[in-house]
Image 1: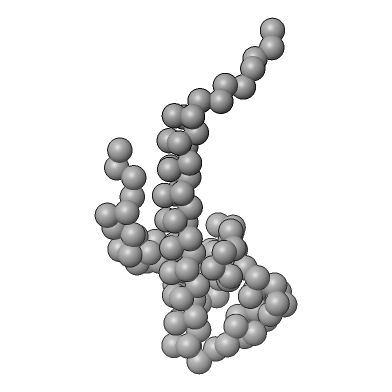
Image 2: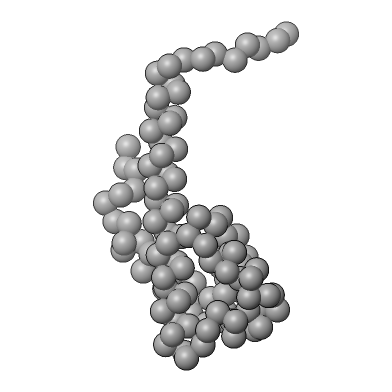
Length: 106
């Protein structure tokens, strides 16, 4: 049996709207994470290259991970925060405060 892909304009519209809201929230969260990391580095008197050395990566690789358009892995996020001595739950709490009211509550 073969299934044909249905091209429902209504479904496409609903999915596009969901993806754009989701993408917006992801982008905002990543931007907030990058700003937070930079603030933590500054508070420690570190530069990104210092963090890169501690992570065992090049400064270029770290910069790529910390681009606002990057899709950083959870593992990388945890490693970065570990080196900065910041509990993960504190970061999620802070990031969540900036996104309150933007979550999809439908």
